Length: 457
Image 1 (tube, rainbow, N blue to C red):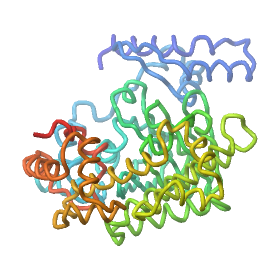
Image 2: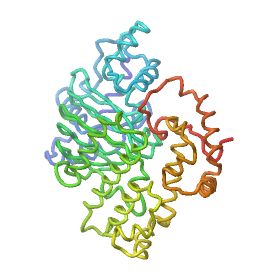
Image 3: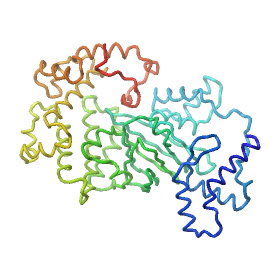
Image 4: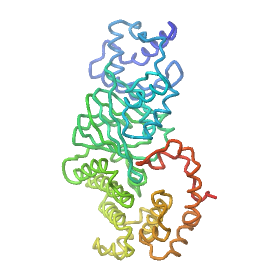
């Protein structure tokens, strides 16, 4: 970096902190100004919008008071002129992580060293590369000069992704507005604080999670997670349409703290951690039910926490319990509005009224879920030896002609044609070069190019 560039950055930093640098400001006034500065983007000399944390702004203020404008110049790196990164290896690092999710960053770095003879950072760079396939392009900001150290593992069950992250050094992870727009993944993110503390921020709201607490926030909006010291987290990526249905607004719940030590929260906590450990032992046939139960429990916890608020009432709670019962008994051929009325001790008319916000009848909702499950099994290589009739009957259908007719009306292609076409397509897809073993990520994360069933040849 030449002298002119250093001066431009120093002037940029001064422009950022100028309004909070007044000598006549009280500590309270300065703190309020710093929060405002941190809450808006600033045009960097390279033309890109940048946001800065309160800690960074405070550090610049201290530097300016001690040394004026010169103290705001970026310091020269001790390793200037030395190649520090190898971006061309990040894709290979991601592939190695996908090939075996249990590989540590140190193991990946060792493999790349023996393949290419290049010593690379085995912590920060490859943690970011490994996390990119799940969380998009997040920015990692170190709070101290300590070497970054973290352990990151993930797995999936049905369309639910579970991750465990342990870090021993303070850091901050942020998803910028630009990265969020490019992400294009319809998920809600839940964080279970196993150990330590984390500070979550999104849309001007901030909350601090302590060990034994959990929260949710929007995966499609910019956010930041600050880890002030060592911490361990369990992270869940939940399909957005599984949480936000009807008039359910995530904004009413985002970054609220929930206890994982009692009641429904404790059940969620135990099931989430046990599911992460037991995924290899859970049969494909049961994986969907386990994922649905976990997601519906999280949704019910959100609903239950809203008692006394006008935007969620008893009808909403009943609707979620009916949906959970349907998900758990989908394979029952006798599942119907009549049976649900008996289970809930409500009239059929009242249940229809409760379900109106879904803009679909209960019978059509059951049919839609059954067809979705059948479609997933038809496209699942593990079910390749099962007949189409067996798959249909296993999800509650009792007439193969009725199943085929409903399937074609919904997806625009008959079941057999979809299975054959998808088998041929998947045999030639480039993702096979990764030779990814189970567990695989949901198609919404891993295969954005999955073809529309209606457009299959």
